[in-house]
Length: 310
Image (cartoon, rainbow, N blue to C red):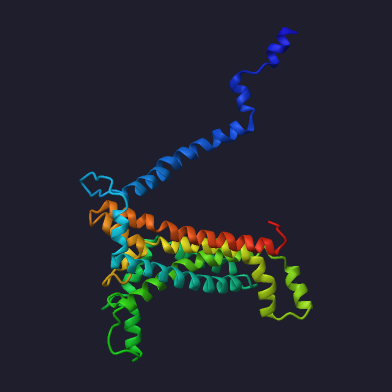
């Protein structure tokens, strides 16, 4: 009897391993340590630096909100805020509109559609720096293929200054960002389109619904949750864009394309003002939270309209 009890007995380690909560914690521990070391600590350090006058090569002291007070009176900072909002809004709207159109097209019964779906992904998978360098050559003031083609057609008399004129530069970087971002939106929405039962479309057609009515009352409502998620990521990616802008314009001309991310880097690293650069980065957080909350409440509103179902 004692041997049976001894054989059935479990040590403390074995008992813990039989507990699902403990097992879950152990499996999550490596990821949690990784996040603390490489995400939480740098984020916390960045917030702290925003309250100091730290410079490269010199430890700073706590100065409270002085960096933020300086930013309130900094015209370049407010220009970067305007540029960031404009860049994010225009690029996100264009990426959604063109991405949805492309997804609807790829969802049709086309020949070689698998090949075309793979081709569509190319702008997204190409490294950002390589894409930016390609656009840099396309926009070059002397060797631009666009300017050359328009001059050959007799539409313009001289090369277009794509990156040297403030308005042209803003349009040019938005076009480059849209070109890179359309595949992500299109493929994500295409995945959503393929989850919509064909019977719903057929039933709507039998009821006499036009193509626009089927899109508006069947396709679009079914895609709403996916659209919310896709647009959230699209806004986050666009709002925090750095590489594309830095390679193409470095924020110029005359700060016309400076985003908050590029201004934060310029002030913090080349400018040596680590505290000020960190303050600009922290100032981005409320805008990002606003975008996330907008998408979240949009999803919740849709669930309430559907009777509270997930």
